[in-house]
Image (cartoon, rainbow, N blue to C red; front, side, top):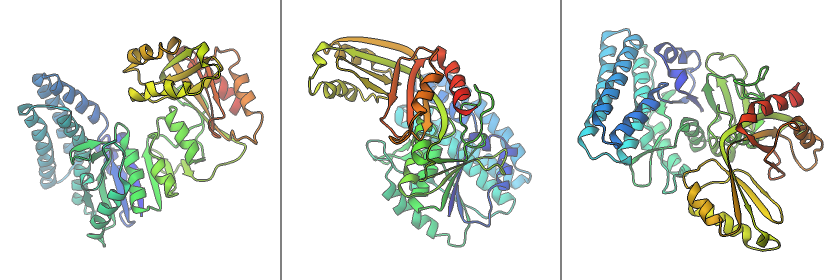
Length: 437
């Protein structure tokens, strides 16, 4: 059984939603995971923020605009009056729920309910459309089997235990439709897997049912060897290992959610990245296999802040790094890159929510320098201990650019450099020219 995930642009218009059947084979047993219609989640975020700040008038106005958009959507999606009426009932129900939240005390719990409506709308409307054209399908409510624990981590065993009986109820059915992104938390409340979580949903479902393959369908023909918005002449990568894909996703390749490969990696389930606009394109295949002696891709991550702690007391002082890292742990702030010397340690973070508190505590250990507006440029490929020459080629490519930090050896799959964001484009283009051309 395969799992196919379609992003917001793939269901972004009635025409595109109809064209899913050019890819989805109703005769093949599969689970289709849908994101919200493109733009919907952004609108729902704005509506939720209006409710949270007490601006109910703004929330009502935003709801009216979004509902009008969906009324136009179903007018193009459905041809028969009875199914158009069914679509109208779907819209009225969900927007009625959203409007009624104005009468309640609105908290982050209700905000999660608001955010869930996008996927619930897209999947239900698609299910009704399949009914109109006579294609049998089953709507699987993700809230019945997707669950995260108190730390926000998915509970795969729970998912397996609850999705398998749902599938077993329909042994003769081939096509199942479910929502990406949404789930329940440890209290049973509606929650989500954070933005971009539909990829994660597909991977988790794939792991839960031990799928033969997970397909992530977007509007790009696979993962490219550089950012095609910035660098000319990029090419899709035919094959990546799970570790390489995870590195690229984390360090800026937008096609894939950073966490989405881990569930499939655990159960060795292949993942394909494919393009809904070009269904015949081969895309990118992600498996356990890794090609030796190859540089695969370059990615960049913006919004990075570098923190340097200089301390003469660090010299030969055991426990120093532990105490430094405990500061970041207390403020739940992940670290991306680390470099050390005998008298200093530099780290990077992308979450500056508690930057002031963190630097205040770090001042206890020595002088602290903070550099903002930095970017991590990551080169992914075979950087194992037995390879040679690649690190030199990377550094040679950026010799004309000031480099703040270099991370090499922590992974067999990447070498990362930290540069000013103003220098990022030049770094990406120079690396591409030197490594791929």
